[in-house]
Every structure is written in C-alpha cells, then in structure tokens.
Length: 186
Image (cartoon, rainbow, N blue to C red; front, side, top):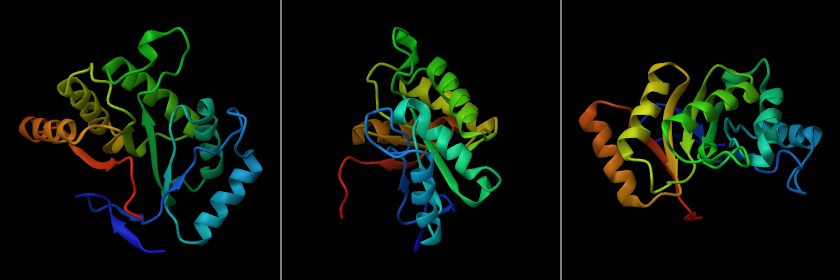
C-alpha cells in the first residue's frame, strides 16, 4: 500500500480508503459484524489506514461496527465520518448543515464510534440553505474543541468549496482539507 498526504495537511493516509457503507444489513444488503471484521482485517493486512463511514450508513450500524472493530487500536487508523443527511424521521432539524445538526450528529457519531474525536469530519452534502459562515464556524468550533482534527466536504459544487475556503482563510477558521467528488479518475 502506498500513502499520500491528505490535502494540505501532514496527515498520511493510505491511497485507498475503506468505505464502510456495507457494514451492517439494515438496507437489506451488506455484512454483519463478523463479515465486516473480515473486510477490515484484509484492508489492514494490505496496509490500509483510512476508514470512511457516515452517521446514516445502515442507520448508524456502520459507525457502531467500526467503533467495536477499532476498540483498543483506534489511533492506528485515520477515521472519517460524515453528517448532513437526516437521522430521525419527523425531525426536520435532524438533517442539513446548520449548527444544531452538526453538533448533534457529531455527538451521536462519537458515541457510536466509541471515541473522543474523529480525524476527518465530512460535510456529506451541501444543503443550499445554511450559510457558509454558519457551517464553517460550527466546524471550526469542533476542531478547536479537539473533537475533530480536519474537516472535508462532499457532494458540493466547486464554487461553494472555493467560497467557503476563502471565508475560512479570511476569518482564521479551519478550511476544508479535502473533498470527495462524484467521479473517480480511476
């Protein structure tokens, strides 16, 4: 396995991340805990160190499995999770990129992951409602509190990312260190 620097940071990540969308079976497909353990073990044996999950992957089961599987060896891995997508049916504030959802989502993710911090906290999808300033300030507060090391963004237009990082630089806040794009060059 080869390693790359993550964005403009000094963080070293394996060039292949282990996506854990299939950890859990709530969607009618995926793997149970034992099968997820087998995948993680193969990934680790190949030299992988970058695990990517999300608060809504299999209704939170993905994070629960990752937390169990990393117990006692959490610091060996670069752990990323995401927020934005609704977590509770009937609660209109359980989705989106506003401060209330960012804080609630992170708190719940940390509990499921059985950790005090995540290395990378991804904004899963741009909501076209919340201002860049509110999003960035809330995320910067999480970085300053030691609950998040870096922030990233996924499923957002390039102009949103450029504007947000310009605002972060102007204000002295944490900027997006990475992006997940819809298509791979592979």
